[in-house]
Length: 242
Ligand SMILES: C[S@@+](CC[C@H](N)C(=O)[O-])C[C@H]1O[C@@H](n2cnc3c(N)ncnc32)[C@H](O)[C@@H]1O
Image (tube, rainbow, N blue to C red):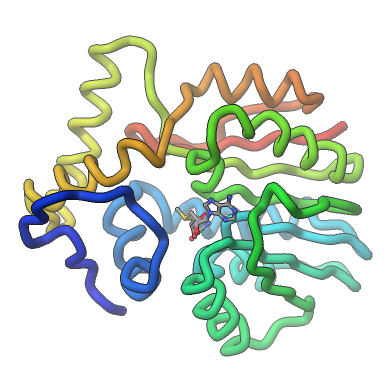
């Protein structure tokens, strides 16, 4: 696994964070050392796939990066005639995702698509995965995407939504940010790496609070919405269509 050193040297003018070749190359190491609970969430996506995926249906992994969630779901699908559709708009990620998928055998077919998730028609879906992707969409586009997902899901289908959260209480927010930075330092990131990456993400990642997510998911129609995992300011929610 290539080590993430992208923000290790001082950068004179820090630009906006993008999922380019350099990031795609080190992405497994980056996400593992930056997102508390990432491996647990990937494992649980497999468990949820086993439980929720219906025969003759589609599974969408929106913002699939190198395909970790797609592969976890595929490994655990026991139903016949299921196709997984993994979508990302970063060509560097999609190329690596395709190679990653091809390296493993699985019963269910996988199609890797290079496109914006806002262009994808969701249909006959029993599971949709948004694993740390919604936070990168402009806030004004989030409701429409969730509406499309809701309409494309079958009855009994599930959305897994993992995100970085913000908290309305300023003391709690500061504490969670601080604990997250401590987690990153414990994983070998320097103070400079933590602060330069924070600056790079400032304009491209706008976080919502857990109540904001809950209200929006209910408003688009989901009958059952719950946070199933949280570690510091990162977590994952499930939303089930009745
Ligand atoms: C934090 S990564 C997701 C990690 C991945 N889901 C996993 O479980 O390993 C966010 C991904 O979303 C993709 N992305 C961001 N905005 C997108 C959009 N509008 N359409 C498609 N992909 C997008 C990025 O290219 C990036 O690969």
